[in-house]
Each structure stands twice: as C-alpha cells, then as structure tokens.
Length: 248
Image (tube, rainbow, N blue to C red; front, side, top):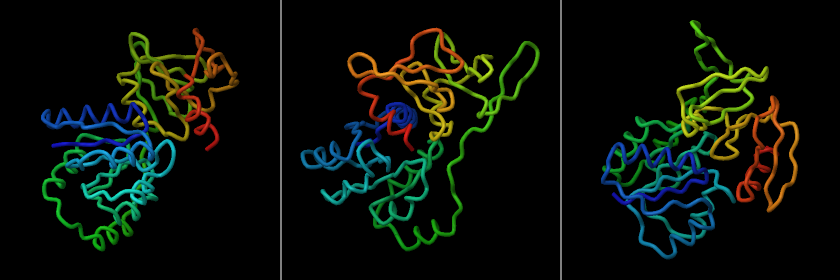
C-alpha cells in the first residue's frame, strides 16, 4: 500500500509512521508533507497514493484548501485534535476521521475500511457525526513512583517534561519524577492548548514560560519556572509555529 502522510508535527508523523509499519511492514510511506503549499505541489507532480492520512490544521492553513486547488481521488483518513471539522471532512473523500491522540486500534480500523473503499454514503456519515458527542480527550493526571509510594500528579501541576537518560516530569514546585513515556508519546496525550514540544528534548507548559528572548540566528531563548539547568532554545525553524501557539 502506497501511503501519503500530510502532517505538520514531526512527533505526530513519527508516531503515525511507527504504528502503520507495526501493523503492516509492507506499507510504503511515499512522502511526508507539512503544509498546504507542499501538498498542492506534490499532487500536481505525483501519482495518487492508495491512501492519505491528512491532518486538518496544517502549518500554513486548513488542509481543505488543498482540494480547492487540485483534484484528489484517493481515500483519506483525517487526523486532528478538533472535532469541529468532522462534517466538512466527510463531505470530501474521507473513509475515516480519527481524533488525536492516535492509537494503533484506530489506525487498524481505518486500514480495514480503506480495503473496502468505494463510494462513501456521506449522508449516513454526516448524520452519524451530527448525533455523536465526540471530543478530544487528554491526559488529566499521571501516576508516578516516589520511594515506596504512588503519587498522583494532575497535569495542571506540570511545568515541563524533558528527556535525559529517562523522561522526567518537572512540577511547578520543582519536584521531578521519571515517567514511563517517551516525548513522542506524551505530546500525543497532553492538551495541545497547554503543552508544546519546543525541541527534541522538551515539552513545556505555557504557564512555565516566564520570559522569551530573541537570540542569535533567529532562535528564541526561553526562561522557565522552575529554572532548567541548561539554556532552553526554540530553533529558528520552529520559532514561527511556537509563536503562533503562544497566541492561540
């Protein structure tokens, strides 16, 4: 199966790719695209894939703008954290609609549907979506070990996560605990309105950022509370998306 992934978050792309290849190692990811502009150009110069996984909110616009510019006949699985786009998604060539965080079970169901893809009954799909009450679900608490105890950590108490030898939670009071998650897994389950992956080593809460400074070569330097032992930077390439997230 030739699969195209259009997703602007690298961690989400890597997670989806990992799940797809875990389900079926013969799947071929033909390309990874991150914007409406890239997608339009790709469709203008390439044959249509067997299946498309498409995030709705891309870096430069909503992905529906792709279909205003090019005809896409491949079946599409939309992925997003926002169910407000559901009706619009199923008016297009959608065979499924997956709310993040993406799971192996949801991808397996979408792949099964793709094998039987014909002409979707959009009226039935839209009616079902209208009567459904689906909304994003994010992790509200973490269970961590503290000596011989188990401690419940509300997500609202977390300042940031960082990767060293292990992955750690750092709380607003400065306490830190190891957790059995990777950063790729964490960014899929925490609320994107509150947490942002600023680089490969850190996911920060918006409440932890106390100062942002322009730095050399277009980078941004962050001051966090509680303070992190090393300097914390957002790369020049990631600065625009980070600032857009801060303004939401």
